[in-house]
Image 1 (tube, rainbow, N blue to C red):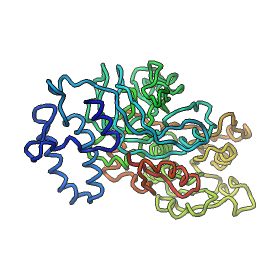
Image 2 (image 1 turned 90 degrees about the horizontal axis):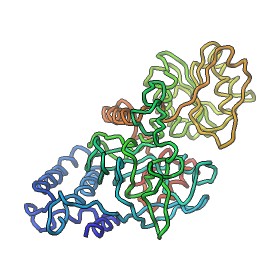
Image 3 (image 1 turned 120 degrees about the horizontal axis):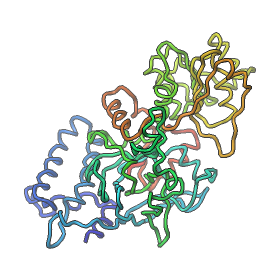
Length: 457
């Protein structure tokens, strides 16, 4: 019965167990009093409509019910929820069977979480350039078949043995950079690159060296420790951030990668100072987040650089003072920026992943103190180059991953900043699509028509 209910839930049968006895007062739950709690959630729907609008309120209600139906739906025969077994769940996932081929919506089996693991019902996920990079076949760690996705948000469905900081029903964001709090990287305030599960994660496996996904009798690999292109996923408990349950999951899912990366590159890695001048190369989602970070940090001049002029208007909405196209000049872009800024910018950011642009960004920095941050990920085997004199004369070249944020402790704070309107998130979402149209999200991205497309599962 549990398996059948899980399969129905994964196929979109949200709400099947709510009020199944007919009357509102007869709603049955697996545990005493839980039916009443679910009713209170449903009564709050009317208030949510007034506060948030009907579409967002419906989305939130579906999130609540998707969780509650599992725990508060048909109780097991002969026992209460305290005896509930955690079963294999059948659900839909977008499987990448091989490189350079569209994702395929399949029914998969998701095994229960093992020790120190968490199974999550994904409510929404965004599509990132890193997903496309792996799907292209260029990723040296890319292996197939795999379930991609790393910008997601959802609700904890169950936890494995030894999990103490999370419980079923928690609202969470899966993290591709974990935070164990124990390794030498976590204990060092200078980095966020936790290495606790790096080896197995890079192989597409859980920490015990196995996968929780199967499809048509075949093992399906995990991706970046998150695999959010699935209605249900299993992640290590050190790769989960518990967030405000009132946060809209179809928005804050973006904090799982791009926005946090760009914003943190400015405020954490570069440590942009008030009154400074900045140049941002590449005005996609990450570049816009860098601009936002520079503005929050108090930069007085922010120059956006991109060969696509269609991106200029939005960049200015995020805080760019001006935008320039390198193709409009006969000189190199670094020469142009040095002339524009009386010697160079204080901070520059490369958000493309092009090694030639990385060099230009460094050489656009001011002698003596300029800092250039590499944010974009170059193709495997690429190398950066510049004249040593650029560094000898005081410029600094830095890199960043996930914006330098120590993930588990920082992502909840970023969600709070969004909820208090300190940082933008909604403005990054240009398209929303249902799960079965996820391949269109990649098409929009490749065509340069989207910043972020959110897929609702």
